[in-house]
Image (cartoon, rainbow, N blue to C red; front, side, top):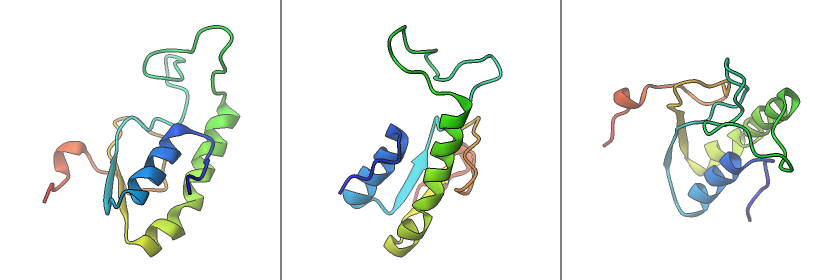
Length: 101
Protein backbone atom coordinates (compact mmCIF):
# COMPACT_ATOMS: atom_id res chain seq x y z
CA UNK A 1 0.00 0.00 0.00
CA UNK A 2 1.21 3.55 -0.74
CA UNK A 3 1.06 5.61 2.42
CA UNK A 4 0.38 9.27 1.92
CA UNK A 5 2.85 11.09 4.15
CA UNK A 6 1.48 14.36 2.73
CA UNK A 7 4.27 14.78 0.16
CA UNK A 8 5.85 13.12 -2.83
CA UNK A 9 9.20 12.57 -1.12
CA UNK A 10 7.59 10.40 1.53
CA UNK A 11 5.71 8.51 -1.17
CA UNK A 12 8.92 8.02 -3.19
CA UNK A 13 10.59 6.34 -0.21
CA UNK A 14 7.49 4.17 0.23
CA UNK A 15 7.63 3.10 -3.43
CA UNK A 16 11.35 2.34 -3.25
CA UNK A 17 10.72 0.06 -0.26
CA UNK A 18 7.83 -1.67 -2.02
CA UNK A 19 10.09 -2.31 -5.02
CA UNK A 20 12.69 -3.93 -2.75
CA UNK A 21 15.24 -1.19 -2.06
CA UNK A 22 17.44 -1.87 0.94
CA UNK A 23 19.35 1.42 0.80
CA UNK A 24 17.84 4.75 -0.21
CA UNK A 25 19.83 7.93 -0.78
CA UNK A 26 17.84 11.16 -0.45
CA UNK A 27 18.72 14.19 -2.57
CA UNK A 28 16.91 17.50 -2.54
CA UNK A 29 14.90 16.89 0.62
CA UNK A 30 15.15 20.51 1.81
CA UNK A 31 11.96 20.30 3.89
CA UNK A 32 11.85 24.02 4.60
CA UNK A 33 11.79 27.46 3.08
CA UNK A 34 15.22 28.39 1.69
CA UNK A 35 17.05 31.50 2.87
CA UNK A 36 16.02 33.22 -0.36
CA UNK A 37 12.34 32.37 0.28
CA UNK A 38 12.01 29.57 -2.29
CA UNK A 39 9.90 26.59 -1.34
CA UNK A 40 11.04 24.43 -4.27
CA UNK A 41 14.31 24.31 -6.20
CA UNK A 42 12.40 25.63 -9.21
CA UNK A 43 10.64 28.39 -7.25
CA UNK A 44 7.05 28.67 -6.19
CA UNK A 45 4.14 27.08 -7.98
CA UNK A 46 2.14 29.46 -10.17
CA UNK A 47 -0.97 31.20 -8.86
CA UNK A 48 -3.77 28.74 -8.28
CA UNK A 49 -1.54 25.96 -6.97
CA UNK A 50 -0.65 25.61 -3.31
CA UNK A 51 2.82 26.45 -2.06
CA UNK A 52 3.92 24.88 1.21
CA UNK A 53 4.13 27.02 4.31
CA UNK A 54 6.33 26.56 7.39
CA UNK A 55 3.63 24.52 9.16
CA UNK A 56 3.41 22.18 6.13
CA UNK A 57 7.15 21.51 6.21
CA UNK A 58 7.00 20.85 9.96
CA UNK A 59 4.17 18.35 9.47
CA UNK A 60 6.04 16.63 6.63
CA UNK A 61 9.20 16.31 8.71
CA UNK A 62 7.14 14.75 11.52
CA UNK A 63 5.57 12.32 9.04
CA UNK A 64 9.01 11.04 8.01
CA UNK A 65 9.75 10.16 11.63
CA UNK A 66 6.71 7.87 11.69
CA UNK A 67 8.23 5.64 9.01
CA UNK A 68 11.42 4.93 10.98
CA UNK A 69 10.14 1.80 12.80
CA UNK A 70 8.82 0.30 9.55
CA UNK A 71 12.09 1.01 7.73
CA UNK A 72 14.02 -0.59 10.57
CA UNK A 73 11.82 -3.71 10.54
CA UNK A 74 12.22 -3.97 6.76
CA UNK A 75 16.02 -3.61 7.02
CA UNK A 76 16.05 -0.47 4.87
CA UNK A 77 18.80 2.10 5.34
CA UNK A 78 17.99 5.71 4.39
CA UNK A 79 20.77 8.29 4.07
CA UNK A 80 19.98 11.96 3.63
CA UNK A 81 22.59 13.34 1.21
CA UNK A 82 20.69 16.58 0.56
CA UNK A 83 23.01 19.60 0.57
CA UNK A 84 20.54 21.78 2.47
CA UNK A 85 17.98 20.07 4.62
CA UNK A 86 15.87 20.44 7.71
CA UNK A 87 14.98 16.74 7.67
CA UNK A 88 16.93 15.36 10.62
CA UNK A 89 15.48 11.90 11.25
CA UNK A 90 17.81 10.11 8.80
CA UNK A 91 21.60 9.92 9.03
CA UNK A 92 23.35 12.62 6.97
CA UNK A 93 26.24 12.02 4.62
CA UNK A 94 27.69 13.93 1.71
CA UNK A 95 26.99 12.23 -1.60
CA UNK A 96 30.73 12.04 -2.31
CA UNK A 97 31.25 10.07 0.94
CA UNK A 98 28.64 7.38 0.40
CA UNK A 99 30.15 3.95 -0.25
CA UNK A 100 28.44 2.63 -3.36
CA UNK A 101 29.16 -1.05 -2.85
